[in-house]
Image (cartoon, rainbow, N blue to C red; front, side, top):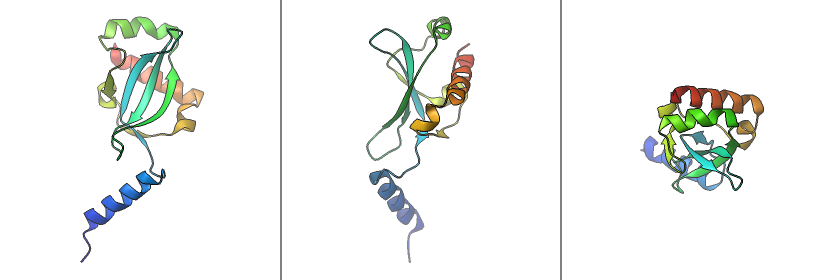
Length: 113
């Protein structure tokens, strides 16, 4: 008899190794680029590699005051749950979409208030 959990785990492992696994944004990290501008990096931390960087988006300057008052730190990874989000499917193309970026920024920074 086949162990379905073992079989499904093997399928997940193979899809992860092959790069075909659908990524889930589970963590974000605030960062500063070389020019000092703030951005957010999106990660999937449930992979065979420990974590998988999905994409960065830059944060408009008008969000700086909210970030500074929030107590969150640059360089620390935070679970998306802290910002009222559930892990969600995403890839580079999705996160590069201006409408998606605007919505995510609004949700994340509204949760900081």
